[in-house]
Amino acid sequence: MDILNGVMQGLQVAFSVEGILLVFIGVLIGTLIGMIPGLGPITAIGVMIPISYGMDIYLALIMMAGVYYGAIFGGSTSSILLNAPGVEGTISTAFDGYPMAQKGHAGKALAIAAICSFVGGTVGVVLLMTFAPALASVAVAFGPAEYFALMLLALTAITSLSDGSMSKALISGVLGFMVATVGIDGQTGTPRFTFGNINLLNGIEFLVIGLGLFAIAEVAVLIINRHKAQAKMHKIGSLRLTKEDFKEMRGPMARQSLIGFLIGVLPGAGATIASFIGYTSEKKLSKKPEEFGKGAVAGLAGPETANNAATSGAFVPLLSLGIPGSGTTAVMLGAFLVMGIQPGPLLMTDHPTLFWAIIISMYIGNIFLLILNLPLIPYISKILMIPRPMLISLVIFFCVIGIYTLSFNVFDLYLLLFFGVIGFLIKLVRIPAAPFILAFILGDMMEQSLRKALTISNGSLSIFIEKPIAVSLLIVSVLSLMIPPLFKYIKKKNTSEQPMDM
Image (tube, helix red, strand yellow):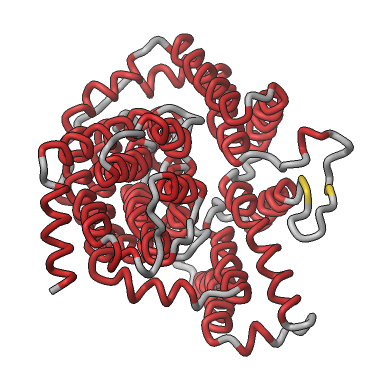
């Protein structure tokens, strides 16, 4: 009865006039901020904490939750249209979304992103509502050994992020690992690879690398090939999706809604890792993997579904354990504490109205996001109609403003330019940027998890064999590396053994 009462009270809050209005404001602000490269939900929520003083606690937290998943929803727009990810969780959206826009199907790409985001977010909320308490115990079961194995499994995806050359993918991944080690060692406090520069002591911001490798590098390519690019990108295309498109979206939406949510449940994983795993897993499962990176529907549907499902999953450790799973949920945790609410195992019993109001409001928010985004696609797509010189200037402007507002440090702008040059050079030699990004994201977490696990076991590697979850993930990692080359070898052998026609 207590749960039923909490659900009923949560419904009253979420469906009140004020609740619906603030959900709408939250998702609208989140969507707009998500579209701007370099900004994101952390900035928006941080700014809204002082603005929400004096507001009803429940309504204020509902609005901030709306900003969070609204930013992930809206971040795909700049990824698809400009190859400039608005938020970290939408980098893999650009892998097939931007090529689709280059082919004159920007409207179709934005429609696929909006529908898949809605499905992923809604399924994630259903799972959150159903399994939050049970999944909280699963998240607690993940220790350093399990996290290392999970990160290793994610890294085996490097082989899927290349265009057939595993060596180039590995080179890109090693470069990403090297950059991830820059800064102060989290365990010993020793500066590493800073070259005496105090600006590097805190490491390099993810968005500096992401916008440099993708947005600035793409700007350089557009400038060099401006006449050719103008002809292709000028077309917006129809928003209408065919039966074949829905057929290709169906599988990724079903799979990645579940996978993305489960990854989001793990503290420290989040929408970024979920989107990468969503992309790579769909490429491995696809019957046409060669189409990925060239505008494949499944290549766009997979990460867009996964990152929005992961956003819902991230609320499981936040609400049930009081553990932030990402930078954004850490700011959300701060907002809870500022308002006198302690998230954790007792939240559902001490504040059932708040618990259920936030979850129920997410249903409303996802509907608002779909209603907001689908009709606006023809107008959003007109970004492509902006004259090329002006569009290039706007991309550079938003990247510079977004990076500068991260730390108000001019040195970050030099880093942005540096990684832009790196991104342009690796494009020239056809080294994929995606493994670089993935290795950078996972590098620090993987290193710290390995060192913590070895500290617990006094240096013994047996800890990875003794833990059932860890050993299972390690076995899957090995298989995911061995099976593709094996299939490739068998296919090559069968082809060579076929008799020649006379």
